Amino acid sequence: MKLNYKKTILVGFAFMSISLFWSLYDGEIQLILSKYIDQNWLIGFIMAWDNILAVFMLPVFGSISDKTKTKWGRRMPYIVLGTIAASIFLVLTAVIDSLASVIGGATLPLLMISLFLTLFSMSIYRSPAVALMPDVTVKPLRSKANAIINLMGALGGVIALVSVPLLTGLEALKDEFGNVIKVEGNDIVLFSVIAALMLLLVAVLFITIKEPVLVKEKQEDDVRFGIEEVEEETKVEQPLSKPEMISLLLILSSIFLWFMGYNAVTSAFSRYSMYHWNFKNYSTLLLVANAGAILAFLPSAMLASKFGRRRTILVGVVLLTLTLGLATFLPEPNAFAYVLLFLAGVAWACINVNSYPMVVELSKNSNIGKYTGYYYAFSMAAQIVTPILSGLFIDNIGYESLFPYGAIFSGLAFFTMFFVRHGDAKPAVPAAKLEVFDVDD
Image (cartoon, rainbow, N blue to C red; front, side):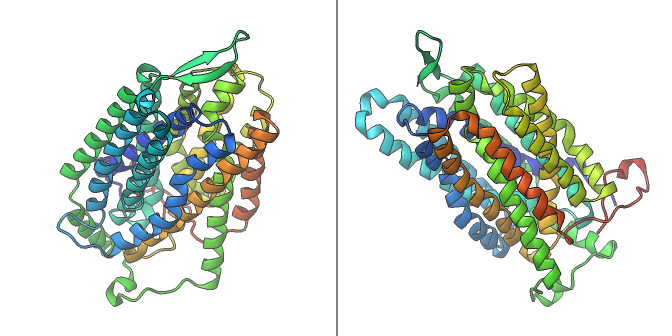
């Protein structure tokens, strides 16, 4: 039983396009908003719109795509249409910002409408894009496949972060003491390039991945390796046992908690770097974190195959808590800051590679989209609350509250994850070097 790397990489193009968008959105949109809004909690609220939509829309579109039947497959129509719409509205957002001097007081309302339409479009295809991997991958190989998917996502993030300093039109205006007081300029070129790359990636996915064919091959592999699901024949969805349901709720609670910590930092990091450290090139710092994640994705899948997904996640949670806690004491982005960010990327890889497979491990072939929606509902619920809550702390205490806030919530996730008993993979001895990352149920 071996993973088809070429197929998985191509499937990962969908997630790569998503990561391109979110790396741009998380860094640049909050800076654009700071041109029109002074309150951090309000910027945090607007930054949480995507997550508010996600809580309602991702389970819906995940479930709808489960029941969709077209000649292009269940997921592909949503991926293609969602990407096209999101790309158009993304560019429109930058155009509206660039016309602020002409539009005047209508700029912010129009910006909000364009942002909402962009985020709604992203909500259409996020669950289907993520569900595509387990649709075409047998359960024992999903941690390894998810490592490849996350690697593709990280590469998308790297491309976006490299593009920012090269193409951004935003400039920091400083006072006589060298403190950043305002952001000026626009991002039309940057947003247009990212939108074009998103369309290109999904076009390659659509041309090369024949979803119905790959789903049929996966079902044949289920039979061949003795992991077929009776539920597929009866078409009756079997409920989870009580211990499985408890584990599912604990996994989802853990996801909520570590996203409360992690997203608080990512959703405010460019402002933290700009206004607290007076360091404009926040993307350079985030590139280091992405490098740590990229290097750790496959090793974390290997660790999961050897020691289990749960244990690997727990190691990641401890490491993330320590790095966020220590970052509190950084007076500026010095060499130690780069070390901590690199380790934070490694920690996030250990968590992210294995958490989603634990959720869908408890699903059936016919309801993967619904369980994908559960995963995103809890992660997005955290990302609704945390930008606003952490923004209130920043407004009332200062930016120095950001990293302790993240460390506390990350640490709480250790306790919920510790008691999980289902959704893991049993350690297996690889039959050959090429199967070193394979995991068994």
